[in-house]
Length: 118
Image 1 (tube, rainbow, N blue to C red):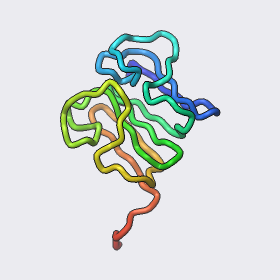
Image 2: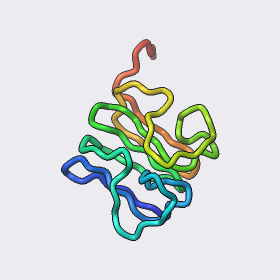
Image 3: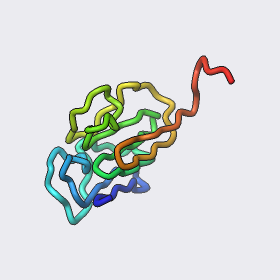
Image 4: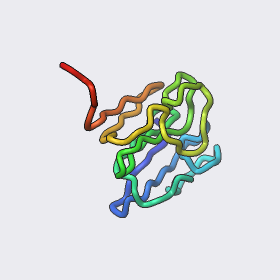
């Protein structure tokens, strides 16, 4: 990865580094050598993960947000169009508790799966 993201103890989300596909979520494609807050702002972020050229994060309300490159559908919105701003995933809902971004994929865990029988 050529970009980094972190959540501060006050719940704000900060990103910096390469931004060729908007993976910093600040509404631009400008690389940043100092941390900037995402366009989504707020103080309710709890976890973030950066992929090669996309980012995914979970808010304290259990919603899952993604932004950056979407060439392989890694943003989870049913399309392949990149985004410069954080947006909720297509599957939406709440209950998301952890996310991990890879090269061109994203995986996430929900704390509750209704109707699932083992």
